[in-house]
Every structure is written in structure tokens, then in C-alpha cells.
Amino acid sequence: MKFFPIALTAIISMILIAGCTQQPPPANNSDNTGNPPSGSVTTTNNDIVVDNGSMINETIEISLEETGLRSVNVSIKKGNTIKFINNSSKAFWPASDPHPVHTNLAGFDARQGLSQGESYSFTFTQEGNFGYHNHLNPGQSGIITVTG
View 1 (cartoon, rainbow, N blue to C red):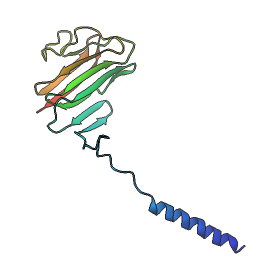
View 2: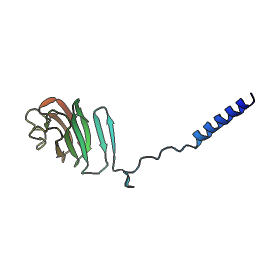
View 3: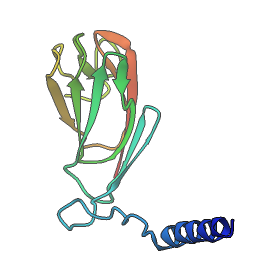
View 4: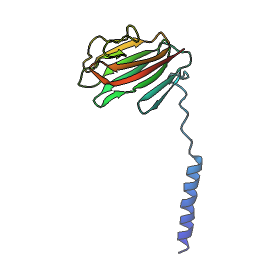
């Protein structure tokens, strides 16, 4: 019977020692090349905010999935590119508002439906809030906010 309290004390001591000596995982402050990250991406539901300081020429993806658009509302810096990708079995035609004329932002219009696996990219060179939609299903829409 004297062995039980000694064994119990030994087990508890080992658990406490193991818990106190465990190292936390390292902070992710590189891009696997040793370089610090160029920015951060924050997502909430279907919104995405890219905080990349003054970096330009970044590409952010918005995709059409079987369940609808992913990353609906996006905030980027001027000079960044949005790549619209069709991951669904239905055609996807990304274009600027308003439907059906696409005149809010000249050039922002794929001008045709994208088949599954195809993509369309547009580089935003002016600041503002730009509504966009799927021309083939205008209820699939969002806003791209471009800042300096």
C-alpha cells in the first residue's frame, strides 16, 4: 500500500515537469525563405483584407466554388491584382458593376464566361470601392476596396 502514494507522486511529478519544459511553437515570421512576410491576410467569413504595406504586384484570388463566391469582399493596395478563378462546374464571368453594362471600372470585364479551371486577372490602378458581379448570375457579387 505504501507503493501507491509513491508511484502516484512520481507520475504527477513527471507530468508537471514535462508540461513545464515543453517549448511553444516558433512564431511564423518568415515565408520559408528566411525573409519576413510581405504582409498579412485577414479573413472573416467571405471578406479578405490584404495588409501588405506599400507592396504592389501582389495577386489575390477570388474563386467561384459550387457553393458560391469565396472571398467576396476584398481590400487591397493600388497596383495589386485580383485573380478570379472558376472552381465550379458553372460558367463564371467576373465584371465590374453595374450589371449588365460593366461601366464602373473600364477594362474590368472578362467579356466571356470562364469554364471550370479557367481564370481572369485584373490589376487595380485606381483607388476606390468597386462593385463586381458574375454576369451570368448577378446575385453573386462583392466589393473590392483599393487604397493607396
